Image (spheres, rainbow, N blue to C red):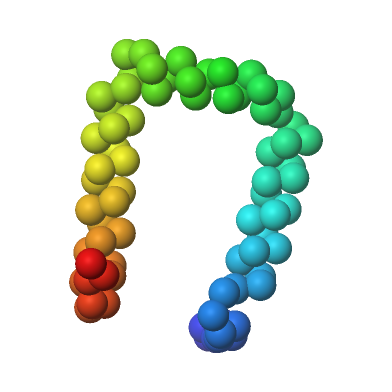
Length: 73
């Protein structure tokens, strides 16, 4: 038996609640300033090319999902 997903209209309140909860949990369990410093080192350091490539691939996939939407100029 499958569980039907309720259409929440524009914007998903349940997804927003889940995101908020995960964010709170992350902040409670991690030193956010340290994580930010680690991210800065990665972006500015030897991982920069790989991270930029991953970003471009993600954006390309996102554009593909919106292929039926008219392009805004």
